[in-house]
Amino acid sequence: MNKIRIHEGKEEIWDSIRKKWVLLTEEEKVRQYCIHRLVEVHQFPVSRIAVERQIKLHSTTKRFDIVVFDPSGNPQIVIECKAPHIKLDQEVLEQVGRYNKVLQAGLIGVTNGAESIFFNIDFEQNLIQYSEFQL
Image (tube, rainbow, N blue to C red; front, side, top):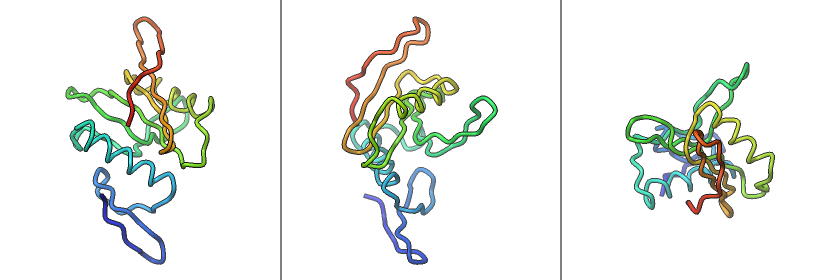
């Protein structure tokens, strides 16, 4: 698991993807758990994972939580992480859907650590189907 430290009175965790110390919030705990599962269980190379990067969405700049890229460098999975107390409702699903309009990944998901929901996206047939993918 990642290193944790106290810096200026605040708990931080080492993010191996971003290569920096980040504040250890409840959402960050979920994000780091997702990264751990993607690398250790699903065997995605660290080099194909991006965390908290900006994207342009219409006239605003947003920041996705996690994107896994395929070997060609195209977005494969988009994951939106929420703190454990946040319910995975329609609003959260719509958020990751908006990000995916730009990213165009074939698999999108949301998680709060305790629960995860993923969907396969078929852009050619304009289909969204529940996925069995689990972190």
